[in-house]
Amino acid sequence: MESKTIGAILIITGTCVGAGILALPLSTAGLGFIPTVISLGITWIISVVTALLLVEVLAKLKIKNINFDTMCSKTLGRVGQVVCMVAYLILMYAVSSAYLSGGTSMLSALLKQGGVTLPYWVSSLVFAIVLGAIVCFGHRSVDLANRTLLSIKGISFIVLVAILMPDVTHANLFDFKHTLPYFWYAVPVLFFAFGFQVIVPSMYNYLEQDIKQLKIAIVVGSLIPFLLYSLWLCVTLGILPRFGHTSYSSFLHTHSSGDVGALFTMLGSQGSLRWSHKVMDVFTNVAVTTSFLTVTMALKDYLSDIFKLDSQTKCGNGKGALLTYLPPLALVLFAPTLFQVALDYAAASLAVVLVFLPVAMAVSIRRQNKLADASGAFKVSGGVPLLTILVIFGIVLLSLSFMASWNMLPVLH
Image (cartoon, rainbow, N blue to C red; front, side, top):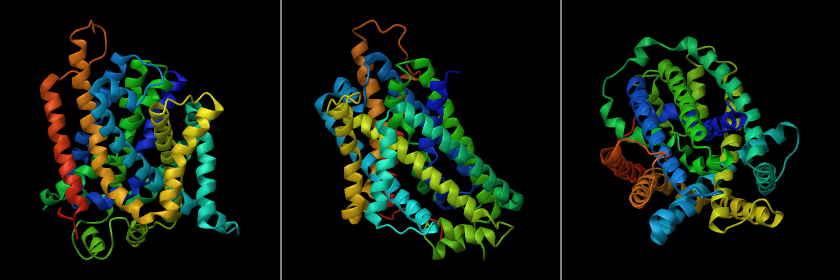
């Protein structure tokens, strides 16, 4: 396997396995381990299929340095281009701001341990500049940095799982009572746990338009997170019961689904997890860093596509960097309430970008290629039935995203 293909696999893995992996147990505790893994498998397959639809569009357009803006323009016209722009920018700026906020907190905590205290805005600026510089050096520098960070992430994950595994019980893993009501809340969370489709065009360019290698990177790069998520859920959901005095239900009755630190304190009371907090801190910090790198890389490539910036020149690269990093910095430092609102609606934008747009572009490109000789070009099999299933899934996903934002879905408590 070529070095770049390995790099693309790891970039896709790094994009998926962000800090959100630690919140998965609390988001899926009501559903239980077995139903969660089955649902996770279904959402993984859908994620791979929608990513391959993007590959089909890229393969038929055959344009270098292409991204979502050009893809939508060529297949969906001006209206599709504008819809993509609104949904993509809301999604990516919100997610970038979230990772920047987490990265700033991480950097501040590390500096405090060394006796250095910086204002919040300085820590944010330093974090953005350091990681932004890696992104500006190009895809290869992101690849190399991601490999290093992912190695640390992998080691810390293995250690964390090894610490927790002895306290897993069979009864907790195979508890199927009263799971169905919590299915609807878990599905969007599980689908959004992948979300790597946003970097498919970037990886297409990085792999020099090699469709075969890109397909390998997508399947393998997303399979690794699926296996890691399954193992993580096995460990965490296998330690505590869903209901009872000391359970996920009792925990969520007094805590939010984002209280991961408090969850580990509770898990620690159930077994010998003396070092789990430190290992979890390492994993979380590295996860934030790798995700920020890959997400902002995809955002910068998209913005370069919109404004036709040449990243090979200092001027084009600099303009792309400013467009990528200044809005998240402004959101985090000056408009945190707007940042939180954007995060609430980022889930709906994700459904548009990750499901509806790939399907719409694939339908359009197939119609266009009926008039041309498209023999030999890659095409996702399944035809109209598959695309119909994806559209239905997208509608359900969009509806559930809004319902979750408005607290209309049953949650464990």
